[in-house]
Each structure stands twice: as structure tokens, then as C-alpha cells.
Length: 323
Image (cartoon, rainbow, N blue to C red):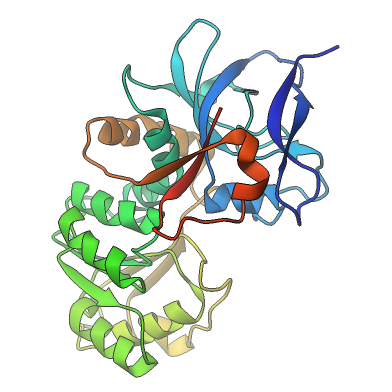
């Protein structure tokens, strides 16, 4: 008989996980048991639990939700652990993960803040470290800056040396707050399309890099606006697709690729190799624990997972389940 823990168990991908007992899988060579403290409810964790992420294997139930979190090893060391594959996620009293997917957490670091920030922070960190040329002496537009990931992207772009950071989003209060976190200019994406296009041309027409968390019709409009400014045809525009909060696909006119130096790439699990992602985590952890990055988190008891799963915080804080 194996060890049983309480966990956020996915019984069906179309329903929230339930707080139920779950038997830990056997611990194989190269794996460790992590007693969990905190695991965040990120869009990546949501899509993985629903079986809708592009890396998901359909039909795997029951599983435990969660792809990362902060916990403690048997010897007392605190770690940040990734669990991107397999049936045992991190939203549990304990989980089994690969030892090489754990990195140390400094003493005194806040588990909730780290859990809230690592996955969204890694999205921008990987994009800027791997998917666009370095050094980043560039003008950067964050499209979808008012979400947790976009908020961190503004801060990370500044850490990476961006000359100018333009933040674009819909929520007026969250957008205004980004001026204190490194944004040089703000673009509201609310309103009539023509008005939004004018704002983007004025504030972001000369950007070199776009970190895109939205995709869909918003990206179509933004791309058309930026590419029809007076920018030089040979001025490279690195458009990095990271998220798809506004839609899964876009229409790109062929002329946009032929008439401008548009370099459209994606950044995420798969386009950036797993070992490369793991190699980026210590520097991101250092930025978080040295208070160079800020994130708002809302701790919720893991036993409340079923009721909290579809109840996002109106103030935009990231839900973090705590054991």
C-alpha cells in the first residue's frame, strides 16, 4: 500500500479539481518527494488540468493539478519544483518530481510569492534570454501587460536592459500602476479599434520587440498598426508569441512578411528546450528573492480548490494554493 496524500485531483477535464486522497506514485531513480507549501493557479496549470495545453496527453485521469510550486525535501532543504509531465502535479500535500527539476529556494524567501511568480516570470525571461537577440538594447512592447505575466514582463524587460518599455492592456487601474514598475509609456487597448490603432502607432510604432500574451484579434490589429507606421522596412521587429488570452489564431497578410522585416516566433514549452528553461530558473529566482521583481499573490487553502478554481480575484492577484 502506497502513501496517500490530499490533493487537487482532476477527475474530469471539464470540471474543477476536487480535494481528494491520491496515492503517490512509486519513487524511481532520479526522483524525490517534495512536501509542498505553495502551488500557483496559473493559466498553464489550468490548461494542463483541463487537458487543453498543447503538451497535454488526452485522457489521463485521475491526475493531480499543478505544474510547479515550493516545498521541502526530506532533508529539510526548500526547493522550487517543476512537474510539467505525468499524472502527479504539485497541488498536493506532497508530490513526486524529478530531482533535476528542483532548484534551491533561499532561506526566508516567501513561498507564496515565488510560487505566484516563477511560471509567469519564466515566460518573459525565456523569451528575452533565448528567442530574441542579446543584448537587449531595444524598445519593447508588452501586449497584455495588465495580467500577472505581462506585469512581470514589463519589469523583466527593464532588468534585461530595454531602452524603452511600452505597456499595453485593457484594465485602466492595473495599466496605470505599471508606470511604477518600469513602463515608460502606457497604451490602453480599450475602445474602438481605430482609436487603439492610433495609440499603438503613436506609442509603439518604433518598437523592436513585442512580447505578446494576447494573440487573436488584438494581435491582428496591433500588428497592422505597428507595421503601417513610418518604420524603416529593414528595421527588424521580433514578435514573440507567448500567450493566447484573446484567441488561439490570427490572420497575417502575406505582405506583412514580405514588406517588413517581421520575425515571428513563439516562446514556451517545446520551442525552448526543457533543459534550457531549467537553466534559466536560478537567475529568475535570484531576481525574485532580491526584490527586483514584484508580484501580487492571493493565498488560498488547498482544501478550497474546488470553489476557488473558477473564482479569479477581481484585483488581478494570482491565486496560490497553500497546504
